[in-house]
Image (cartoon, rainbow, N blue to C red; front, side, top):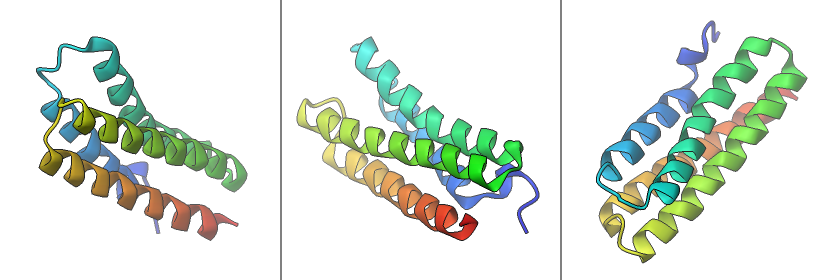
Length: 114
């Protein structure tokens, strides 16, 4: 039984993803790019937590769908970050896999709430 949003595995992994994005792009001077990918990753965490606190299954699902969309945005931006040399292939691949795992967890959680 999940009692707090911090117990949700997708939230825990989103926290790890966000920390990695901040760490790997710390020295990036493209502030608009960096801000966008950081905001998208934070959005995953925050939508999971906010939706959980709403307590209704329908509303929680809605926030989980938003978090899932933000996860896709992060993956898209990670591809671009690698393409333009902001992040190494190895680091981008690790973060991409983590984001993809979060999306799968969110899909399972959404399905369980139906």
